[in-house]
Image (cartoon, rainbow, N blue to C red; front, top):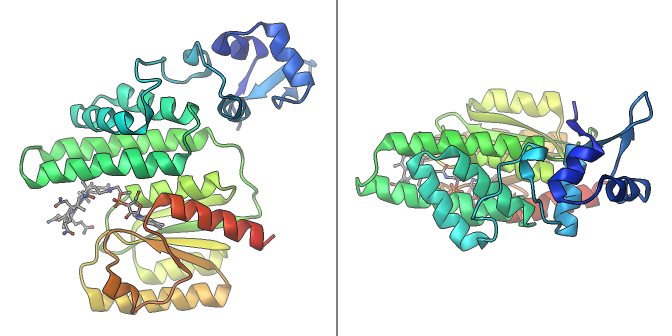
Length: 288
Ligand code: B12
């Protein structure tokens, strides 16, 4: 169900008069729907799209249910990354959320926020954990916070085309959840109707998911491999299933070494969410 806002709420959020806003609706600059009583209502995802495209300042984000404007609004990606890292380590959920939404409203693509803010924050957390300067609970709490933010960003995306299905996840033994959640969001942002299968899925079940859902695009996240030979074997089954169903098969993740990549068959290897987004856009255009 789409979240709908009144022109008054949106006008307050962006600091313009209600009549200007209604005019923009009538000119088709912002999508509006009419209620049974004839009143205009604006879907939140379309309002956010409009604000990003027009680079419109949001003076009162709380009127849109977004985090209160922070002193971080103009921070840019590099400072955003450092502040986001600190916020995760401190467990400051509202600040972490503010930073991501400020960057998002400042028109940074979601895949760039993932690659240049969220992933480096976790690399830093991993580095500190490795040299024992950070307790593991801080890492786990950081993952929880990030998942909540990614889900919230997902809810703010426009409805995808229901005929373009994409799904993916990680295999048994690989318990990393952030990569597939991120891939889901990034591919969805490229217009696909995505559903992440989650992590740690036995290969037979993943093959079954491909046969039953018949996606056009499938992603496999590979962050951890316990037994390389078993992985190569499982991968072969998966690769055959994607081939039979005719699925564009994208893979990525830190455990895919150059050597391993020569032993497996796939359509596209991506080492970033930006590459995954480009691939998703390309497949969407080519398979119309
Ligand atoms: C969080 C975390 C965990 C959590 C994950 C929780 C969760 N719910 O996801 C848990 C607790 C599961 C965990 C466990 C382990 N971890 Co750990 N973990 C991390 C940490 C801090 C962050 C990883 C993460 O999710 N990053 C976010 C993702 C999205 O970023 P990324 O992996 O960098 O992805 C980039 C690209 O690879 C690409 N990408 C990734 N996946 C995909 C998928 C697709 C389809 C595409 C297109 C692209 C893509 O996009 C991203 C670029 O923007 C890293 C630190 C680090 N440097 O990465 C250590 C780290 C990876 N872990 C490590 C280790 C050792 C482990 C364990 C083996 C520990 C143990 N002894 O049990 C286990 C293995 C678990 C398993 N069997 O799967 C080491 C690995 C060392 C090595 N040489 O390989 C690291 C590097 C920590 C360290 N510095 O030592 N871990």
